[in-house]
Length: 338
Image (cartoon, rainbow, N blue to C red; front, side, top):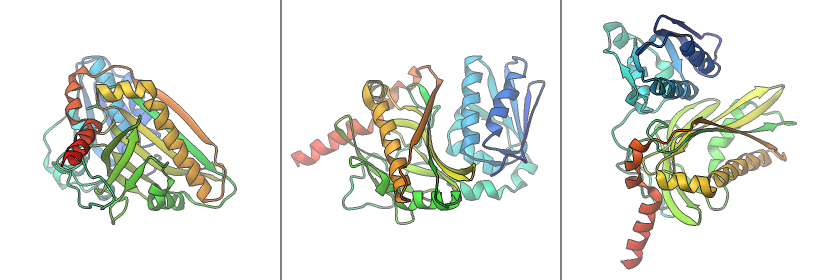
């Protein structure tokens, strides 16, 4: 998706989004919001929006946070059926009220959106059960995004430059998708389905966090030729998504991993504060180092991070009920007794 066909304008209490909401358009959305008067209701006009990617959803999440802090409300109108499904899938419809669909909205065609995103569903259903994997804490659960988590919301970006080799962004992402499990550190085991990393599939994760085993997974939320995105289920250490993308910069291809998430519950937040955050950062640096090594490069991984929302969402304290690490320990203890 490109940004040249996008336009975001604000007037009165309305933000009109034309074309695409992705990439550089994200900053434009926040800028447009700051130009509005502080009315109680903010209207988002999507009647001429044709494309949206996970970066666009990031911008909407940040907008939701700003609006909530000012005791305002967001109302989205002109949404096509496909956009409604994306809002529901990413769970931002928890914070953005969607106006009733019109006949024009129902008939609108935005097939670029629907073909790149997974289809919405009620509960996760695991279709593959590798004999060597623990497949707990996935079936029957729901997805959880940055607005449903507990701890502080962080955006962490890791990237490596593939200098000296001729590889396109498409080729880079193809390698990352096909060989993703092999780039993981020893304590991380990822089990994609036979279909691979495509929208709607689930990747099982068996790992060790702070010395304690955990069985969980991620859902493939989105994928196009140069990117793909994982979203977390209930009980996962984080609530949000991780976005992988490749792009060209100064005649080189950059491979980037961007996390946009917060700790899912109080226990995980404490764990991240103690050492988990550093461990997580080392994991993604390891993945990109191994990825660069696949092409014979000694890749230097650049890391940047920022706290998007410092507040703790105490209303989501109940998330601890689904804590995958606690449940994994209980499952293993039960198996040992049996």
